[in-house]
Image (tube, rainbow, N blue to C red):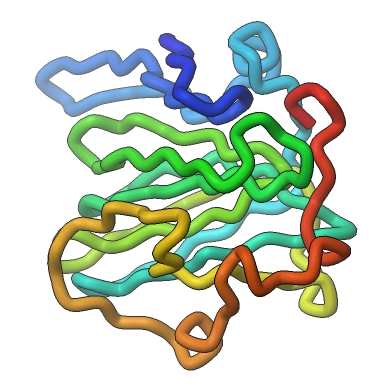
Length: 188
């Protein structure tokens, strides 16, 4: 199992070991001890799954009082998965990283608490599964505009399908700083 550092501390690309033979494959999708040793020392309390069609963009979402770290992987299809550092005071505030995750590569992305997260479906359909470090709380849900020009995420060029909620999210500059997580001086 490989834990690959990214340009933003705490965001980690993970390549699980996969064992293949004539029957198919086997892989461990999570092992708390191995992940802690690899730099993902979190407990997960909720698992989510979504199914979406090509061009669907979900995000960029975050929670403030109950921030969720997310371990994201694709069961079917391909997505472009993005993490944006929105922690006030962070040396990488406003920066983003994005990776293509697919059912063929089986890579995972860990997005720490305090980041905005979103993804775009690149294949005809995609089934995305993710583990969360805290429970979803509707009253604590916030978001950031997917196309914020100052952040400049380079989404793959295709027509985008958004929810009404995601269309109306603010830019990072328009969010009152009291509604942004605070960097603690280390990965949360």
